[in-house]
Length: 541
Image (cartoon, rainbow, N blue to C red; front, side, top):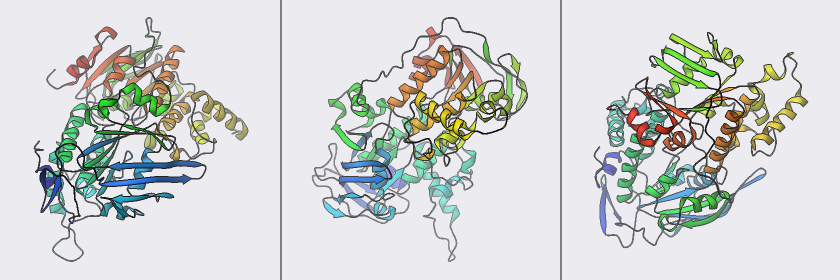
């Protein structure tokens, strides 16, 4: 991948008019297509590229931002940290014009400006890669990258699709993403869709690029490709605001760090001047165990899940694995190796063409409804699209999967349902003002707790967690793993799918590793390490 200074921005600079850009004290010139800009070699210049001063934003019953000041400089990666619900995404939506600030002001290169709409922000060179995708599923990759910025054809009112595919290919090549640009987005996995989102933002030639958890669904290899792109963009004068819950990324990429808590700025520092523990303490206001230590299972119970020679139309072949009561079994592998496909086949979403699946000794022959009756629960990778009815209330979602068990006579009792929901909210420590709160407005960590809670209501004893900590903060992660620990202590079996290798190493009793749709091997507790997981998962292992 060619990402040498002076070439990446040119490759990505497909269409955008020149913007005024001044940087005092510049020592290097980098070319952005036909225009040139000045950029410093290392430290950001004194004059912020964009500055937000005293920003406040109020929603019904919630003061999401309270007097927050935040600035970005050219040629820097500014890490923005905080728990889910701390105000990070709200601040970025104010910066990008999606929300209007109730109070505060903006300055671009020291000059007062207004940001009241996305158009205002785009004129200042702001582009955002949101954690939740904004792709059109049935359009192809090229159409999604240039949606709203289509190339005009030779005839009035027509679009030059051929050029869109050529330019899309240039952007994707810089990311090391080799999918055909004709591919409809709905046929891509979550990680591949994230790469399309990144390509779409980079194609706008942003001066200020906001990335909200960009690596959450990416493999190690894809993450490293993204890091190369970020470093080159930084060298070429781009300011990057990077939201992450991964401490390794904070210290690998960050130049400055700002921490929010409860809508307020609680601190600002640099990576060299702090530690992961100090940052976590600033974020959550207390000490948090980042190792997720647990008491490992010495004598597992009866088989909860057995897969024997399972083949499925989703691409997995000859999968053999077992999860026993009282243990957490990891399922690792590179993105696209077949991890989620194993979960879907086990639960009955994708049909099994060969082999068998047993749940607590009983063969599963039907659809997911039979898996639920046998005591299985699936917490999917995409909680918003597959795990929740986000437009419904917290109470509705908590009751959704367990209605048959909770009300066996077929008569729904609203008062009993409300009490059951309140009990679940208290037990799982779900942060919501009422059970009637719409689920879509809650933080990622609280949404994940709701997905788990709805399965607890079914009496499930076998849980498949697919990327359970994707996009949630360190405090919520600790709570999720504490909950998983309680489940296995009470006799449940857990299959844990995670791209975060430290999670597999620190949490699991043993682990299987997938490669190209097959189980490449199994590692016992004393064999578990990040190196051994990667070795089994790599093509040339």
